[in-house]
Image (cartoon, rainbow, N blue to C red; front, side, top):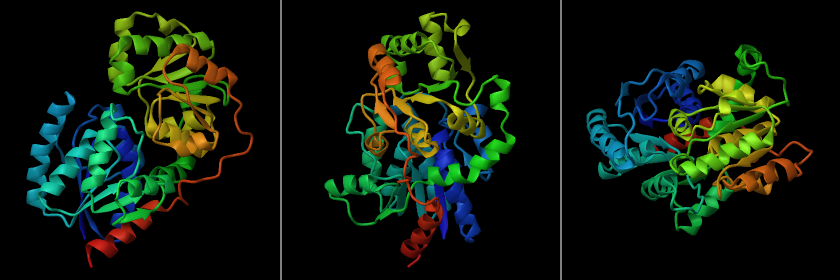
Length: 357
C-alpha cells in the first residue's frame, strides 16, 4: 500500500508520528508531504528531529499568507505531487489549511482519502478550523475518530460509512514520548521552575491574536493572576504583543520562544494549571491530569469539559480570573477516554483492510 501523507503544522507532526511509524513497520510505503505551513525551526524542524519522523519527501514551502492565498498555493502544488506519485490513499490530519487542501485535491483526483481526527465539532463556523474539518470529513472515504462523541457528530450529519472509532494518535504520542521527555528535557532547570509551582499558557488562534483588544484582555488577566506563567509565544502572537506595549516582560510572565515537543510535554506535565486556546493542549492536559482553562468561547474537546478537567473561560479578564481562582478541580486522575494508546496500529490495520481489498 502506498500512502501519501499531508502535514504542515506542529499539531499534525505529533498526530502523524505514531501512524508513520506504524505504516513503515508494517512494510507499507509512505510519501510524506510537508506543506511548509509552519516553517521555522521551532514550529517545524525540531518536531521532526525529536519525534524521529522520517524526513519529508518534499516540502512545498508555502509559508505564511492569508487563508485563501495559503490554501491556493497548497492546492496547486499538492495536485502536481499527487498526480506524479499516484498513491493508493491520501492521509490528512486535523483541521488546518493543509488538511483542507489535501482533502480537496484528493477528492478532485478521485484518490481515496483518510481523515485522522475526524468528527470534531466546535459548532462555531467563525473558526476557520471548523470549516476545514467539516469539509474534510464530508469528502473523506475513511474517517478515523478519536472519541465516541466524534462518531456521534458524524452520524448527525449523515456520515456513517467508513467511520471507525480508533482513539487518539496524540495519546499514542504522549505514551511513547513521555518517558523520553523525562530523560532528555532540561526545560524546568533552564527556566528555574519547580513542579506544580507555575502556570503554562499558549495563545495562537487568529480570533485571539488578530483583535488587539481581545489579546490585551487575555494578557491583562495573565498579569492580574500574579503567578509565574510560562508563555511560549507563537511568532504571530509575539508580533501582536509588541504592538500593545504592555511591558509584561519584566513581570512574572516568562515569555519564551516556542519549545520542542519534549520540552512542552515536561512543561505540561509539571504545570499547576494550563491556560490555552489550543485543542491539542487541552487534550494533553487531560492526559496528564492537569487542570485546563480554555481561552475560547467553545471547544471541540467537550469530553474534557464533561469530565471536569477543562473549563471554558472565554477571553474576558473576568472570566479567565474566575476560572483560575474559583474552579474546584477533580481530585481523582481522569479516566482515559481517548483510546488505549494503540490508535496508530488500528488505523493502519483498517486502511490495509479497506484500501487493498
